[in-house]
Structures are given as C-alpha cells and as structure tokens.
Amino acid sequence: MTLTMSKGFRPKKALLKRIKITGKGKMLRRQTRLNHFNAKDSGKNTRRKRKESLITRSDKKALRQLLPI
Image 1 (cartoon, rainbow, N blue to C red):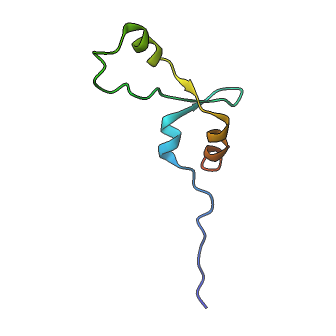
Image 2 (image 1 turned 60 degrees about the vertical axis):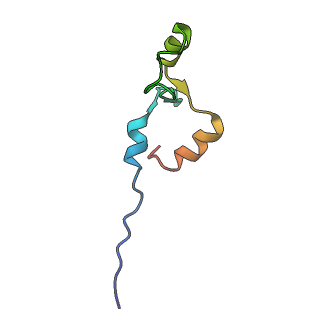
Image 3 (image 1 turned 90 degrees about the horizontal axis):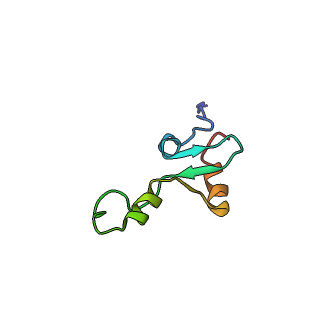
C-alpha cells in the first residue's frame, strides 16, 4: 500500500504580485497598454493609465478561487 501526500491549497504567487486588495475587499489591477508605443498617446490618455483599475465582478469570482481569501 502506497501513501500519497496531498499538498493542499497553494495560492498562485504570480497573481498575488499582480493585484492589490483594498481594505474593503476590492481588487485593483495595473492598466494595460502601458509598456511601449506610448508616444502617440495623448497626455490625457497617459495620465489615465497611471491609475489602477478595478477588476470586474465576474473576474473577481474566478480570481478568488486562486487566492487565499
């Protein structure tokens, strides 16, 4: 008889590095399209991209299964 050990729940560390969870439980993420080719963007667009954006309710449900929340 062989005995197998289960590892249990292991949170996704890569996801923890990419999102921020506020005190009230909201999830924030970094804006997309910010790496390169930004010279052609307007100043208004560039300033808007500096802020973090909320993760939608439907995505939040899927992400909670990967996190230790």
